[in-house]
Image 1 (cartoon, one colour):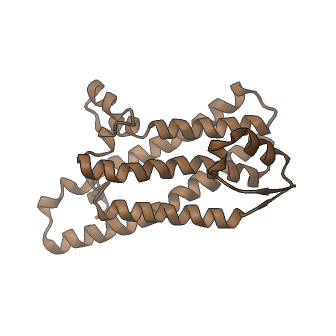
Image 2: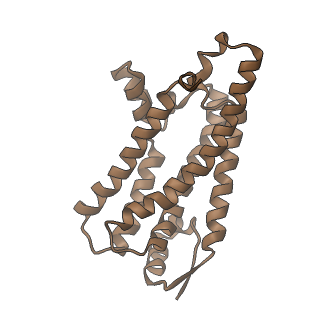
Length: 220
């Protein structure tokens, strides 16, 4: 059976989508959907860069920069966000699938297809964050969908706040989607699969919080 890849269908009809994916012998639209997700990711990161979302790490340094240095930083920031728009889907689609593939007896391509559905939640989060961050003048630490707000009441350590800011309801939703489909396609138990999947996201949250915490000035 040839499986037609429709990432959004994975949300609205998970039972049917999961069964078709499980029984599929081949998949259509694989490269097309990957390219589309990459393009959407790059566009969202470019738009966020235009609005200055994510500049918290350099905002405190602006007063010490002259016009030329400021322009260089701005261009580097924009280029960095475009690069991030390419790197993030590569990690969530391919690296994560490779990580899961080492543990579960599911074909690599099917794991990438599962990641496509989960990654749509990531893109939805970025899409919602753009107008919310711009109109409400907030940053990731004050994202109402994350644990960052709670963390600010517990500690003043920026790195810890940055870590909890990465944990959002969308990220939890991604974990739920991946767990659902992986458990459906593998014979491993929940006690084996869920911690393995969560561990990947925890590592991503740690790395992401560390990069957001590092001040860009240390590279110059």
